Length: 382
Image (cartoon, rainbow, N blue to C red; front, side):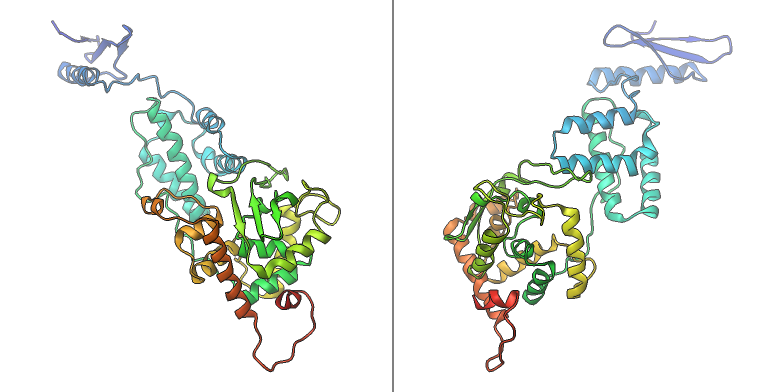
């Protein structure tokens, strides 16, 4: 007589096996066996899993992937822009392939086939983002003991290999600021020499600006979703909440913008449109694209790449890695950075170095006559 489980033979001659699970429920093998020995081997494997604590309810993975994935996103509590990204990747790239499957039906071969199909249909960066999202969802399912192991096992599939970002010159930044128009030129300069994210600039207010100290306090962010709604809230990370010391050459532009364009009142927005509406990514995007064409910078140069320009120029002016991280509102978990310090005084030094570098780059050769004092030239002479 068997110590664990039971086997019996059908009239057809094939064998079946069954056992009692941890809750006392009778469980039968999902298939029949040709011999009694095969049925007993299967029972021995189940007994070993129970003894080692590796046994998993065979019905646990019978959860629809789409239902689980959407609940997973709902429970993340991420920022609105990240939530929007997750749902877009699911809708366009993941659910069409997996929404009809249960969690335990998604096997490694199916994941590999899906990834190969996506790589043939869209960009590698999007596929990498989609793969990371799929892997994260299924990793949680494994933690929830709904599946035994995560089927996303493709080495390096979640890594992005982005092309080297373009860096604008000082002259190009000036030209772009001139081309977007006087109302928006400060936004270009803050993007490059802040360097501030566009969603951070969208939430800047008069009370955040100290013209005498040449500082701007970044407290919040207001990214614009694809629906057109501004999602006012926290910065990208805690490091995003910071004081930015601006180089002195921006004093004229900053003062003029406060006098001419900022919304009235201490809580007034720093950037508003011609009709007084809050800054919109879509409307500014049209001006940016026209300015980019006029100046002749590459088509792939995004407004966000002004930050990369600012990083590079700050480093060249003598800033340490920690200095540039503080200035740009970036966080890092690398242990080496814990022992580096960048206080307000050091940030003032960085801004001064940046000021000297830009002024030197703008300086015309001696003996060359000055031309009309319009736009960027006014700032050069300030």
